Image 1 (cartoon, rainbow, N blue to C red):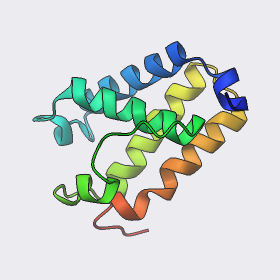
Image 2: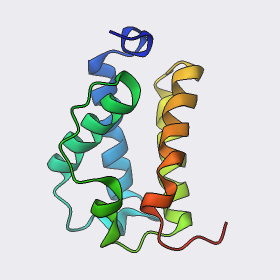
Image 3: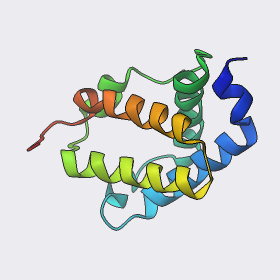
Length: 120
């Protein structure tokens, strides 16, 4: 178990992911991206992906990030909105600052694989 895993329980991580998927799918700015998405499957994949990024578990069973998002027209603003939602959720759940920074940096590292059009 690495240091992050020791400080962020599996239960808390699952709650954070559940909240994230709920907020993304109902958000007035990005919710439209999730209208036809199987949210239970998305929750499972998001949880696996977060575990891998934070704990190095290598449990992610989804398609590569670029492949999974290629069929969607995701622009920089939508990507930024997802990051903002996650950041707010991490703060609300009192996740340690270094874990938040690590998680958000990992998410930002995926930008070029997710975003198709970016004005930034």
